[in-house]
Image 1 (cartoon, rainbow, N blue to C red):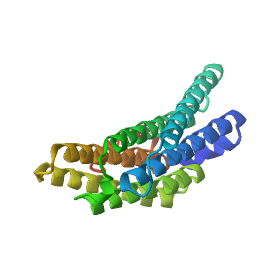
Image 2 (cartoon, rainbow, N blue to C red):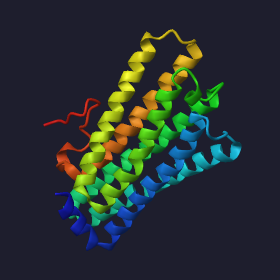
Image 3 (tube, rainbow, N blue to C red):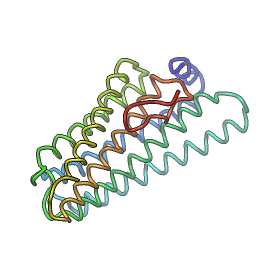
Image 4 (cartoon, helix red, strand yellow):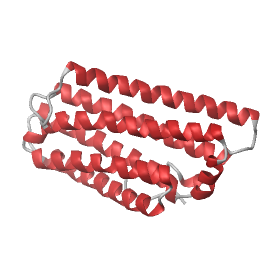
Length: 226
C-alpha cells in the first residue's frame, strides 16, 4: 500500500510539497533532540541559546503541522474522495512528529530541573545508553519513511520496540530503588519521555510496513490492533 501511495504522491505537486514539509518536521525533531540529550548526558552545557533554539524549532514543527493540516483539508474539500489514503498517512505522521517536539521540550524541562547530569549519576550508564539508543532511531525512521524503505522500517520498528521495553525495565528498577525523591522523579520523567519519543518514532515507521487502518494502533508492548 505504501509504495502505491508514494507513487501517487510523485504525480501531484501539492502532495509532494506536503510530503516535503513532513520531512522537514522529522529533521527539525532531530535538531531538538540532540542538544537536549547532550545536556542530559552531561556532555553539553544548558545555555539560554540552546533553550531558545529548542523552543524556536518546536514552533517551526507546529507551524509545519498546521500548514500540512490546512492544505490537506483544502485539498480534500476541492477533490473529495481523491488521495484520501496518502492524506490520512500524512496526517498520522505529522501528528507523531509534532508530539516528538513536545516530548523534547519535556526533556528540556527535566534538564532545567537537574542538579547534576542524569548521565553521571547512579543510573548514568543506563541513561546514557537510552539517550543514545533513542537518538539512533531518528535518522533510520526518517529515511525509511521518506524513501519507502520497508526493510529499514521493519528493523527500525523492532529497535524502537526494544528501546521502549528497556525504558520499562529502567522504570521498574527505579520503583524498587531508594534514591532521593528529586533524583528519582527526574529520572522517571526522563525515561518516560524517552519511551514516548521511541514509540512515536516507531509509529512513524509503521506507516511503511502496516496497512493504513492499523497506523497508531501500536501499543507499548509492540503489538498492534487486528
